[in-house]
Length: 341
Ligand code: ADP
Ligand code: MG
Image (tube, rainbow, N blue to C red; front, side, top):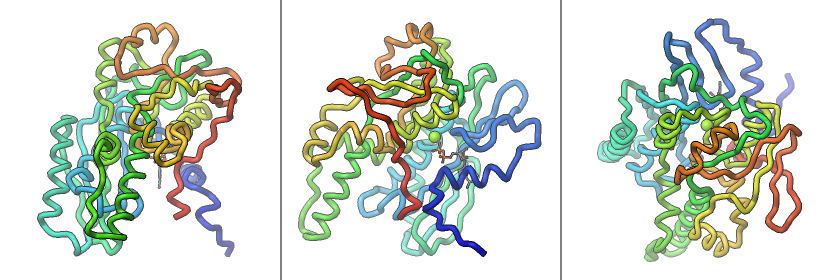
């Protein structure tokens, strides 16, 4: 029998291969594989379900990730996927694979973070599973949430001339990771060295303790604006924008000089001799929302302090970056590379 290496397929190729073999047959299944969360008709509302797994050595390094933060993040990234459907998360289940290296106190710490996230996002922990693991710590969280049927935002609803918006700022988590990796190498070379994190708390904080933008979902609801499409930025703006464009059958123009990048991120990019724009496009782990709104709706949200227009949707399918220097560059996905590890 022929053997195909995983990395020839990539993450999305693999997901497509799996999903092509499953066709939803229950009428309640409104949306299966392919968006930030599955959509189930439960009567007067849609229920949303999303799941994400974090693996030690792939998604986090326990040498610089406090367990409390890890617990918080495992919850927040799932709530972010519910938010990306314009929904509000209500329940989570948490499944953990534990290596025998972990003490009871360490597990307490992890659950402190989970509890803190439950409080701050107003979600209930309603179940899970516990097992032993031979390959380090594994945390898998499933979140459920709800949205009014007429308020749901899929990835596939962007229309030409819609305004493309992003929340918060980008690339901070990417440089947070570069800093922690650098300090880890310094420490490994000389264990007496203390990590040099002065002025970098913002970046490190964005990596270790990302927030789901449920606050923006509430603001959009209050202003009665429903995004025509939405996705959360886990793999980098480029990859997520390409999902919106390919699923919507449109293209986009993004303005380089509109990309929201904080000064400290810019400064740190210079320090690492890396392009802040490339990091904003491909860095990942921002957990901000990327969405499109009708031009008429943009007037209603333009005063929101943490929402920024960065471009617009086009009829032609090209996804491009309008450069500060003039000219254009094609936006390509370079996001997810875990399968190559
Ligand atoms: P996100 O980055 O928003 O979490 P992913 O890229 O992980 O989304 O997943 C995209 C879609 O593929 C989602 O609908 C997800 O539920 C689905 N998916 C991912 N892995 C699998 C799998 N192993 N089996 C079935 N569906 C999957
Ligand atoms: Mg997502």
